[in-house]
Length: 315
Image (cartoon, rainbow, N blue to C red; front, side, top):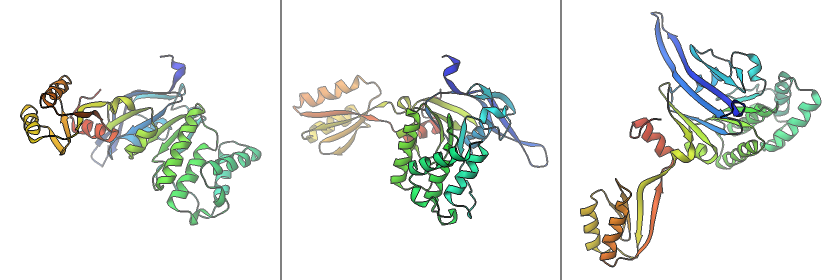
């Protein structure tokens, strides 16, 4: 891959925190390596304490790695210029309650080096995009959690960044708002922006991300396209017009783990995909009419849990 296509590159990154007064250590990250392509929406997943926030802080220069390296758009993250193209929405962010939404964006726009005219134009557009135009002049202390989250997203975009780091962007947002934020992220992708998303809502990640990385106890256990992690499994749901008792008994004998869902639906996980043909042969010999044989797709949540439990190989 041409390096010019890479937005984030992490090489054998480790982070160790000192713990207590006796020289103890906590390994937050261990030999993490990954790449994020420009223009992708990339999801970072993992249970609490997996090291997700630590990795984001290293990428944004808020923490220094103990070992290894990381770069954003070709610049080492220890170089302050690596953050010039970045926008960031932290988890549990705090904005001054006495300010209005418009005033807060003016402050952050100024901190980003924008002119008054640029701030005014971008604030107007962004508040409209995140559905906050009506409340631009309301004090933040009157905002709901979801409204603050929308404002936070506008803040992350005020400097028109090339890469946006979002930590739980849909936290506290209602289902309609989550859908709207997903649409915003997809629009950013269409504009060629890169989005680095940290979220515990796996259904949200599955709906919007191109690729994901899964961390567990500081180690990278899987990275790849969402389509790979939500691959079609070897489980099938077989539907018939009606399933006679004799057919059900023969199927249970041949496939002990088969599950009779209703009087015309069976769920079976095959050790070998060719076993599907054996099942079909049984039903045909008994003149049972098959109406569907549907492969069951693994959700990202199922794949995530299987990886954490060690039920599938890391890679």
